[in-house]
Structures are given as structure tokens and as C-alpha cells.
Amino acid sequence: MKEYTVAVVGATGAVGRMMINVLEERNFPVKELRLFASPKSKGIKIPFRGEEINVEVLEETKSFKGIDIALFSAGAQRSLEYAPKFANDGAVVIDNSSAWRMDPEVPLVVPEVNPHAISKYKTEGIIANPNCSTIQMVVALKPIHEVAKIKRIVVSTYQSVSGAGQKAIDELISQIKAWCSGEPLPPAKHLPQTIAFNCIPHIDVFLPNRYTKEEMKMVEETKKIMEDPSIRVTATTVRVPVFYGHAESVNVETEKKLSVEEVIEILRKAPG
Ligand SMILES: NC(=O)c1ccc[n+]([C@@H]2O[C@H](COP(=O)([O-])OP(=O)(O)OC[C@H]3O[C@@H](n4cnc5c(N)ncnc54)[C@H](OP(=O)(O)O)[C@@H]3O)[C@@H](O)[C@H]2O)c1
Image (cartoon, rainbow, N blue to C red; front, side, top):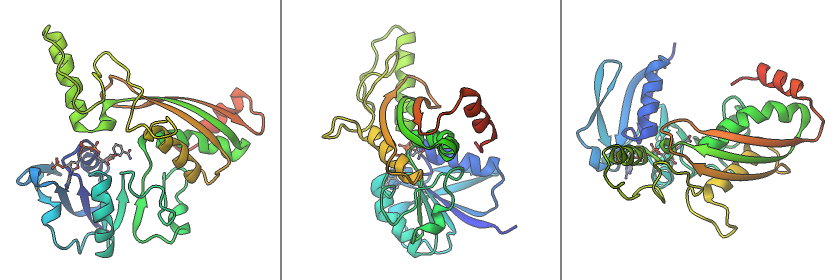
């Protein structure tokens, strides 16, 4: 089997660490693993397949030659700046940030839904990965859309703090610990309000149309991935005091009438 040199950019973050675990768990054919983060993480080592791998400082690295696949999860700014550099040096970049998702030249891909998009676009070596809430929704909706054409979607989310990064996970832990010891809850720093024992309908910033950016990501990304700009989507996204795992309530109207039994059968046969 061919083996690949894989880079994880944002290796010390909540997503990056999970990517490293999954590469190991799935026995992905990794020839060499290169890990990148900010200057703050200089000297940190992360275990992979029984070895300790040194974290490299992204901005101190001059060449990215020799990397076959680069998994990016270090924020949109880093993706905008460094994804083209990795791609120019020969890597295929798979970007988890929002930086490239709506770029008309960049495929936005969920493997179970639209893998063909990779060859459809004139890609320059960057493949975007959608928002986490969009991913799980389109995996469930694409097979229904193929049979009955979805006209509109009303989605409400219940999103865990992991989606806001490691600092948000730590913030929930510290608020719960304070509550258990009868101390005042530490103030919110990384989330807009206290998250312990609370639900916050405010993820990312508010936009002029009064939706949040997180909500509009679900609207726009869904149309691009399903390759159907006519689908009407409205979203309400809510952060809930759960560590990992997003839930969603999705209400859809289809052009062709379907029974509940037919929908269950479609979903039972669908990948994912
Ligand atoms: N598609 C999805 O499903 C999904 C889900 C969640 C998040 N995301 C995206 O993934 C990205 C990371 O999310 P996260 O939850 O893992 O955040 P996080 O826990 O805050 O981790 C951020 C990572 O970025 C690194 N970083 C920050 N500034 C950097 C710099 N100047 N140079 C190099 N590396 C830098 C951090 O390194 P240090 O530790 O050294 O600071 C850390 O490894 C975000 O863009 C987020 O929107 C995508």
C-alpha cells in the first residue's frame, strides 16, 4: 500500500489532536507525520504510534516540500495564508476552517455526499471541509434529496463546546468545578456567556441580516454541497453545555410526498 507524508496544522488543538488519534486508530498509511502549531507550542511532543513527534512552528518553517496530505485546523487566517504555500509545495490540503469553503474554485466536500466535487472543480490543491453542523445534516439529507427533492429545511442545533475549541472545553470544566465546590462561576472568556447550565443561541458573530455567521454557514454550505441553490434553508444554532457531540432537529419539506416508512428505508440504506 502506498504510504503518505501527512501534516497536521493546528496539531495541538481540539480538532488537530482528534485527527492524530483517528489517523492512528484507522491505521492510515502514514510514512511520516509532521505536526505544526504556533510558537507557543514549540518543544511540545505529541504521541503517535508509540513515538513522540515534535511540534514544529508553522511560521518558522520555510518549505513544506515532501508533504503529500496536509490536514489544516488552525483557524481561517492560517488557512488563508498557509494552505496555498503547502499546495504550491505539492501537498493536497484538506482544510477544516471556514477560509476556503465558499470560494467558487474550491470544492467543498463531504465524502459520503459529494466526493465527485473533487474532480469537478479546477482545484489548486485545496479541498474544503464544511462546518461540523452542516456535515452531519447533509449526510442525512442527501439520500432523501435524491429520491424526493428537498424544497426547504428548518434546522435547529444543539452544539457541544468542543466546536469552539480546547479553550471552550476547559471553560466549561472550570465553571462546573467551581459550581461543585460552591464557588462563584468564573466569567466567560472564550464563549459569549457562561455556558455551564446554560444554552447560548449565539455561535460566531451576528451578521447584518441578524442571523449568526454559524447559521449562515449552514444555509450557504448546504446549497453548495447539495449542488442545489434552490433549496431554502433557515438555521438556529445553539451552544449547549455538553463536551462533545452536536445534535440537530431537522424539519424538511420534499417536492415528492414520502411516507415515514419510506424515509426510514432510504436512511437505512444510505452511507453514514
Ligand atoms: N470542520 C469541522 O468540523 C470543524 C470543527 C471544529 C473546528 N473546526 C475548525 O478547526 C480550526 C481549529 O479548531 P479547534 O477547535 O481545534 O481550535 P483550538 O482547540 O483552539 O486549536 C487551534 C489550533 O490552531 C493552532 N494555531 C493557532 N494560532 C496559530 C498560528 N499562528 N500558527 C500555527 N498554529 C496556530 C493552535 O496552536 P497552539 O496550541 O500552539 O496555539 C492549535 O493547535 C478552526 O478553524 C475551526 O473553525 C472545524
